Image (cartoon, rainbow, N blue to C red; front, side, top):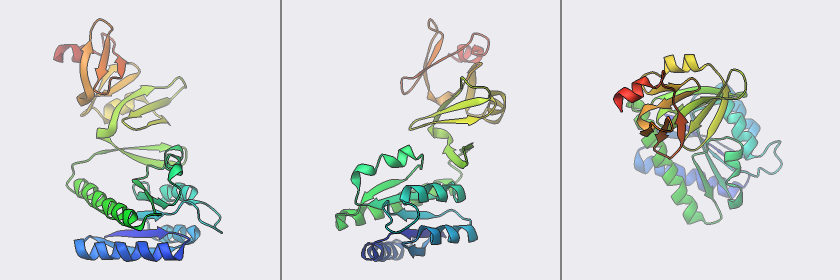
Length: 244
């Protein structure tokens, strides 16, 4: 059962979120439960320290009187629950881009100024979460786990386009559909661990095979479905040329 945590400093909004979520859980017979409702981020983190499991988090951005805001709280949650679902429910619509700046991988950003739209957003998030959890349980999704700074991330393999060596020693760049990450790694180790889905086309490039749209033999580049291009060497790209 997935636990739901709500951190909201406005008591009226907090109760409205809780009541609506409880209603949806009952009506839809969802395998979820409200584990904690609080305006204190420290209390939420203490709860996670006691119970390490994947959860769902509905967070306000501005937590008045608290030692941290919702974005900092999201970072702390990620350290404890790398695969949890973060949803921001706030009045500040223009701060949505901050979730990307903080690399929080938030599921959604819901404005609470309009209660009706807020309820629609809450229900939408529950539906998306159940669909994703269902796919994971069916074994339809594989993940690449990577540590960036002090945060562990789990990136769905189908979201990754390619890996490339960085200009810095022992650094690898992960290029996904929606983001780019930099981490310490070895291209040889990546190739060995991901050989079922990725192909080494160049000394510095490991490309997801089903993302290759065409091969530009003249430029000696592979063209990906999103238009990006990666070089391939004649030696390492032999398999590409044979298949193409």
